[in-house]
Length: 374
Image (tube, rainbow, N blue to C red):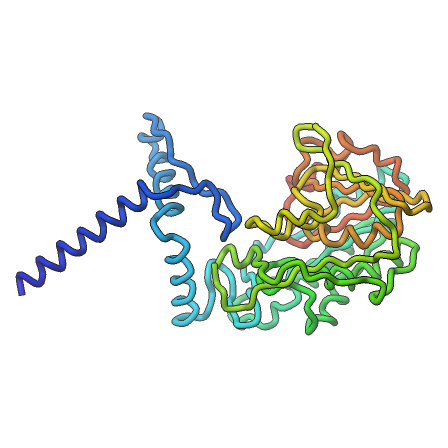
């Protein structure tokens, strides 16, 4: 029995030693494509960090992010957890059909109304706003009863009630809820699919005073069937099927003449509406409008002289291409990437119409929204 115990101890120590060597001396990556995030770097020890414990915390994060065969362990752990418990991994409810975010900050989005009210008061153009529910807002009714998640429908309603009467509110929630049996949201992401965006576009463009492009005018290209989004990044669960990403092309419609971007450092460059090279990265969704930048200006062959300012989060990325059929010029602003105020980059007075399009989760981000103010 003592021999068996000793052999077990030696094998255990050997395993730990080999695992430690693989962790600290194996191939090191700075970025996890599977989780679409940067991994922790090796901490640089200093006496203050050693004294207050911050170096120890950083070292723990480094080991957690770089331990050997990490992705395999995480995927296996996710699979075991969903088999043995109530299928919740890192705040995500895992089913065979889809992944659903169970986290809810509980913060009201009503305070965000002040930002848009101030914008409308300071500018003469027409202001329109679309508050888009996340996938949990539409499919949250399948969550277990004990998971209390505040209704996004109620949140949006309260937010709209707090807006000034001259701001045009556009309902996305009820459109999407009514169509929830269709492929309107990705199975592994909080965001809508291009079809979900199209369904809301039809109402938005009518509110903006134009007729929508009919569905049968588009040629639909499936550019990938292996997309896995932000909820997959948190779980590495492959229970739901990978998602399909589409491009809707109206070959008889308006064409893009130029696409110019302003980077965070103030430099300008050439942008693209669809960047297919992003399909080979861990952030496939950024194929829509390409790398995230503060400002993108798109000019088209449309001869209407209509100009539109779009201020959006990532929900707007696959939505903006539908608008190109109706405007000669669209300027797209991503407040999350702004280094200063919106007015530092764009003369809002040049645009008769401004469309705000944000997911409910972004409407909680007061620091980001503050950049919209003049």
